[in-house]
Image (cartoon, rainbow, N blue to C red; front, side):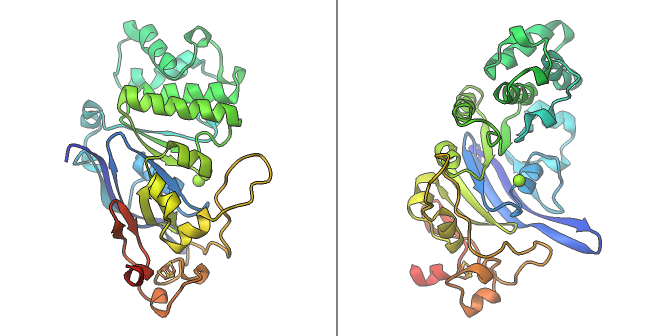
Length: 316
Ligand code: SF4
Ligand code: MG
């Protein structure tokens, strides 16, 4: 299908001493071209891991990710570059991703020169183009990352990601470390870039306001599984899965003006030893006998709205 950017169906088992962690337990997710999919869930649920697998930093142990119908894992690097099936990841802490001994100019030029995106003679135009796209003044490119504010550094990071001409960006808490006013600017930049460069996004965030603002669709993750996904208005108005309902429950907003996801009662079980059946059953107020035995399958409960809960059979 021409309008599907990525079709993801995978498992990821991480070997740890004397154990296997099912970090991603049969995730399936289809992302349309140009879409922003917000991915949320408690820390430790596997969202960053899924982001890393999608970005090609970690390989799944089973399953595949089809990019525009092609399996990137079996595709030679050169072909991937030719098709532009490149995914870049933008992390929370831009400083960690930037070599402090390189100037902004060197940081932007490094990857495109290595991968042959531009010739030496085109360097200045190429670097300036991507800095401008990220809203960074090229006149400052001879300086080092530590000479800039967090927001400026994140712009350098974004320019650096864009310079290898990706079609897909994975943003993992990319604005979490920034001041609220700068957050809004960077979020708007992401939206502008989507339109200018036809980008598709997976946007991992724990901030309710950010997710609501930026996402077209939201996927809710719990212990390595996606338990619900729906268009953004739908998920906020009609959350179906008991976990989503708990996560989105009204929170008294006292300080900071930030809207955070609710802290769900009970502890997140260890992915080393996930509960049987529905992973959420030990914390679910509606748990039934079968929830301890059968893992519920995601089903469509309204157009474009999928939820994995045994209650749905009874609610429908
Ligand atoms: Fe709760 Fe059962 Fe639904 Fe899981 S399947 S969320 S335990 S009702
Ligand atoms: Mg994380």
